[in-house]
Image (cartoon, rainbow, N blue to C red):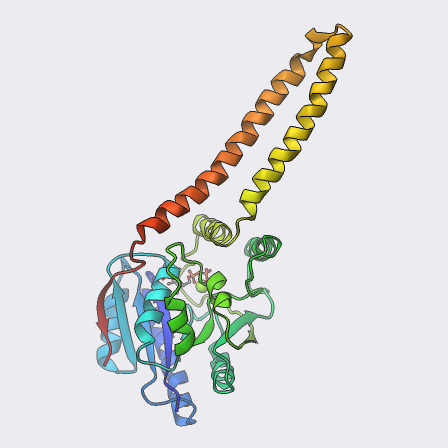
Length: 314
Ligand code: UDP
Ligand code: MG
């Protein structure tokens, strides 16, 4: 029988944690009773440097029932790193791990289907949202826009899939070989390959607490995703450069003609406009190049992506 670990990154989640733990414990127990998963299966919470009582709740859960285990990161490293810390720690104990959010927005009833597909031989099972009814219009449009931009840029990501997925031990071991520091799991997992499948589910609203992804974090996450996986923005600079060069030749011709006709003074608008335009484009290009250089800088440091402070597992 397969041992399954549920991995849940938590950042300041004291409001939802007890309820989440209760529901996940029920779920795991039902699956154990049905004979679907082994008794060694666990629910592992990763405390991503929370400032509230999250870790003491996790410790309490762990001492009350050994179905719960906990990992405490040395400080806040963000959702993706916390998730990776959890996955890399539990992969030595399980046959497959399922990652999900602490707020249980992802429907836990599809876990059964995840496990069925895993038993049928899939190494990666993606949870995909069937619709976005529960999102605000803003979140819906920005999120879908993001998936579309990624597609245009040639990045292979699963549409409407967040980080709710099952990965086999083998897939997790392969994930470990990706050494990059700028972590965007949704882009990396499809690169691993192996047999995969999707399971559709409906996403609920958070039952308590607030989103830990304010607009600023969301934007930087999207930007990270794009610049970590696509060099198309750099190529775009080249295209802009070529277009600008050709248009400047045309403009030059125009300037020459009016110069020959003796109307040069009138050129003031053109001159000023082109200075501003060129300046703007150059700055933009420098910015994009700088972004990639920044990435190279970070990658060359090869800093650890997380540091585990404690690991409690009965
Ligand atoms: N999270 C985390 N570290 C962070 C931010 C978020 O571990 O720095 C966790 C959070 O506790 C939750 C998950 O990532 O379990 C997703 O966050 P949230 O539900 O706030 O995002 P949303 O669903 O609003 O996109
Ligand atoms: Mg959420």
